Length: 295
Image 1 (spheres, helix red, strand yellow):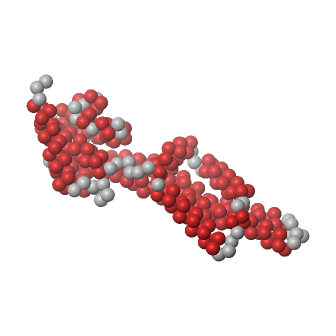
Image 2: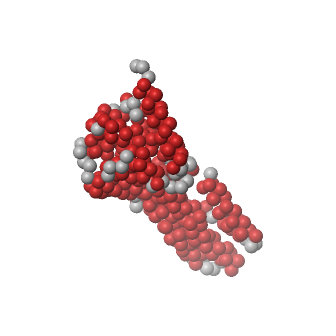
Image 3: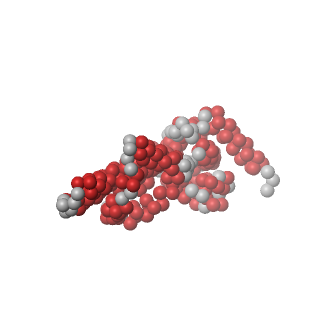
C-alpha cells in the first residue's frame, strides 16, 4: 500500500509541478523514449544477472506489497518453542531431543506451533543446530562462527534481488542519456527544418533524460531499498535463535536464554519482559496439564 501511495506522490509532485509551471503534458508523452530506456534496462538486467538471481527477483517482488513476515506473536511462539526444547534438554539430557528433531511433524513440541512448523527456513535452522548440540558440539565459539557464516550466506542470497534491482536503477539515467543523445542526433539530421520544429524535437529528446532519472530514483531504486529493509527484518529471526542457543550453550537457564533472544529483536516486534514471561507461564501450564492428562 505504501509503495502505491509513494508512486502516486512522486507522479503528482513531478507532473503537477510541471503543469503548474506552464508545461504541456503532451510533450512528456514519448513512447519511443520509453521503449529505448525500458528495453535497454530490461536487456541489461538479463545480461547482468544469473538465472538464479532472476528467479529470486521474481519471487521477491510480491513481498514489496505485503506486510512484515514475522509479527510479535510469531516471535513469542518462537521463544516459547525454544524454551520448551531447551527445558526438555536440560531436564532429560540433550539426547531426549533427538526424537523431536528427527521427525518434527510428529513432535509433541513442534506441533504446538504449526506456523513455525510450516516455515522451512526456521525449522531447518533450529533442527540443524540442535542436532549439533546433541552430537556434542558444545563449543560456543565454534558454534557462533558457524551460525554467523550461515546467516551471512542467507543475507547474501536474500539481498540478491535488491542488488539486481539497484543495479537496474543505477543504469536507467545512463539509458535516459542514450535516448536523449539519439534524439539530438535525429534533430541534427533535420537541421534544415524551421526553428520551432527543431525546438520541439530537442524538447522531445530531453524527455529521455528526464524519464531515465525519474524512473531510476522515483520508481526502481526505492524498491531495492525497501527490499533490503524487509530482508533485514526477516533475517533478524535467525539472530534471535542464535542468541538463545548460544546462551543455552554457555549455561544459561532456558528462561534466561529466551530473554537473550528477546533483546535482539527490533522494537516494533519485541515483546516486553512481562509479555514474554506471561507467555512462558501459559506454555508451562499447558505443558504440565497435557503431561498429567490420562492417556
